Length: 288
Image 1 (tube, rainbow, N blue to C red):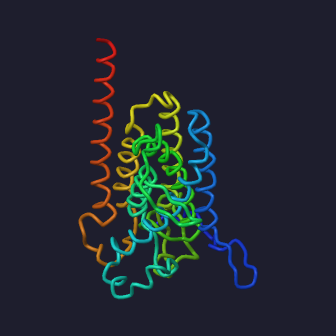
Image 2 (image 1 turned 45 degrees about the vertical axis):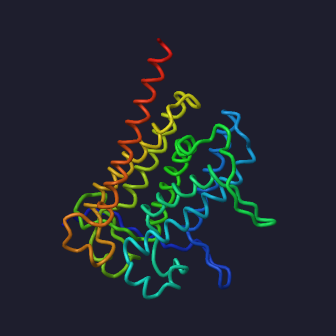
């Protein structure tokens, strides 16, 4: 084993005031929404969309992201435990969040945003006429720009928590997670959280560049489909460098994260194919 490695001594807590503890993960999670909202504001300004719609979108995004991530972890990774202890579903500190569940949650939330409206005072939930110029795929093409950046923050939060660690390695950039669980603090490991955080940052730059080339003229589905293909292809391969998240994954040829990634990659391929096929037909029709 190489003697070259990075000793990771970061702790999850930023500071405490009495019984209240502020943690890096929570701050970074919230920061993703704050910066994401700013990015969406700029996009809606550029494309002259109603700015008031963004408040509704933020509500749908926050609720669907948190619920999707939590339910995804509970039912993808530990269904027997949470079905036996259903109240723990509402106690995220007794378990985790799952990115595949986040994706399902966001898809559901954006579909609801595109088709329904919610009023809190008084409370109403009713079907609405489709928001002008904001179809399901239109919104997804833009929201995944912010989701990619949010993924960067969240994975860095995982790094601060010394969780979702990689397998042992003797590479010189290996991390020794001295504040992690005793079972992982023994040897230097791949900083898999950092790999994914950097990848999400690069993905954010790529999808924003892809959007900025044509903005409102972007074929609907092109950005969303590309996002799915890149994110979950990377996730599939990164899983080979990670420690198993739950006991039932031990001995599996492909773990749960990889099995869940495959359908999203295929969906991405299909969406991109549809977008490009429709775009080519529109160009052909315009030239005829």
